[in-house]
Length: 123
Image (tube, rainbow, N blue to C red; front, side, top):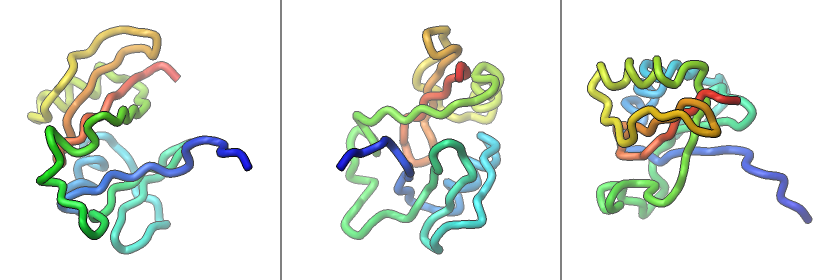
């Protein structure tokens, strides 16, 4: 048997609708019609991305220094600098300022649940 790679990514969040609204309104993701009632799945490609209610026993407030610490979540955008500017203007915490590198323009922000998300613009 062989694993072929990531096939689905989901973040456990404190408030499902608040998190979904952030990813829709600030990042422009669109909801997929598929998905269980405890999650919002977005129509991302090639790997589906979702936000979901925490699994039993998960307390995001106990995650230190923040949920997902040690995991690198990268999302692709057409214009990383433009997205950075919009997020910063809306008061979204920016953890790493925009810089050019091998994956194009990149920056890292903190989502409403404290996850560090890096955006890049080179496909």
